[in-house]
Image 1 (tube, one colour):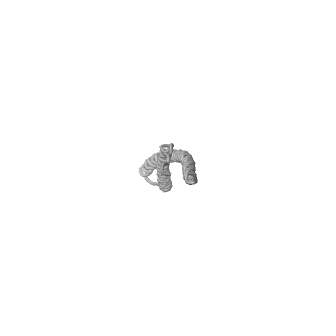
Image 2 (tube, one colour; image 1 turned 90 degrees about the vertical axis):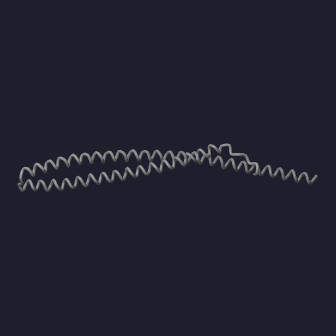
Image 3 (tube, one colour; image 1 turned 30 degrees about the horizontal axis):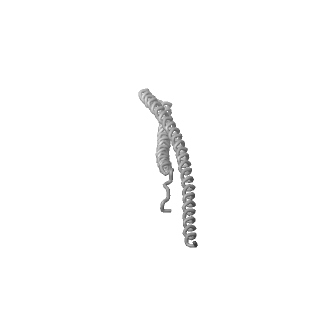
Length: 159
């Protein structure tokens, strides 16, 4: 096979392999972003839950203190503190919703990247299949040439 022809779709073959590599790298990046978004949801949700539990615990304690009779100034301070905590809780809930939205977007991006990788892989495999078929044809042609050459040599000796 010394004088084998160059595969006519070699550029396409290289391009498809490169596209698959780029798609694989993009999927890896999207999966890392999805994991980061998932971690953000977990962290933000945990902070909101801790804040909510802490606020509820202090609110129960303040109500008990009010029931037991305490100075009005302390009751007003406790009311201010509870209002501030409710505002903080609302901010935390917004952060949780935002983190969940980011996670949903990251999940969609990862699915799109997964689909793109599958398409790139299928395109590369189609070219590779064509290349294998072409190689087999080249091999058969080379064998036929070698066989014909051998027959010519044998025919020349027999005369």
